Image (cartoon, rainbow, N blue to C red):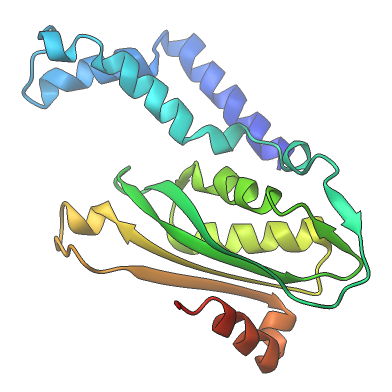
Length: 203
């Protein structure tokens, strides 16, 4: 994880040094290509705002999982399922750079330790705040929880609405996409999987 983030950071610096460009200047150049005047009052600060917005929306590339977990792992004797439901997330489709958003349900079976509950939504945000596809986002969250907690199993289900389907292309306003990732006991034991799905079923 750290090596990948470092490679991204170094590539960004290399691009800026080599071309002397920033996101702000690129957006300013883009505005006339869209048919607008970048010197119009309402657009004067737009390149700067877009740069700051994109930096925020993709900050997951620079996140470090160990720093986020921050030793919030606790020894416990429990074989019960831990479930965090309805975690809101916002991400950007890597194909069109349009938003998709929804909620994610995360569950795991601890072996001998649990993670602080607030850390699970933070881990979701790490991977959501990147250019993503929903399928990979779901899998990355599941695998990270499994690795961090050394869980006997992890289940993740996410449901999202995609602006690339709503605003363009097929223009379907009421469709949603559901993806799942099942690891360990959640994949091999039907009873475990069924318990998880029953716990996250809308009430």
